[in-house]
Image 1: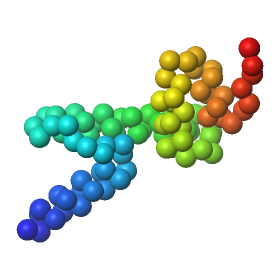
Image 2 (image 1 turned 90 degrees about the vertical axis):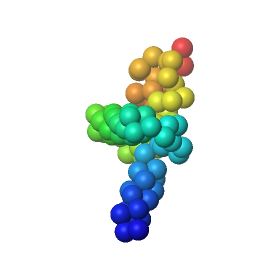
Image 3 (image 1 turned 135 degrees about the horizontal axis):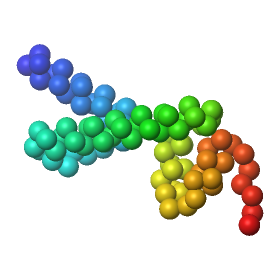
Image 4 (image 1 turned 180 degrees about the vertical axis):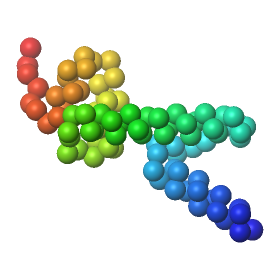
Length: 88
C-alpha cells in the first residue's frame, strides 16, 4: 500500500507540474513517451523564458507560443519580451 501511495503522489505532482491532464496510453512505453515529451516542452518553454528575459509566467509563455504557432518567430518573441508589436 505504501508504494502505491507514493506512485499516486508522483503522478499527481507530474500532472500539476506539466501540461499532462490525461494519459493516452496504459502501455509503459506510451506513458514514458508522453512524460518525456511533456518534460521537454516544459524545459523548452523555460529556455524561451530565460533567453527572452521575460517576466511572464511559463503558462502565459506556453499560451503565446501555442496561439502563434504558425506566425513568424519575431511576433511571438516581441509578445513574450513585452515589447509592443508593430502594425504592418
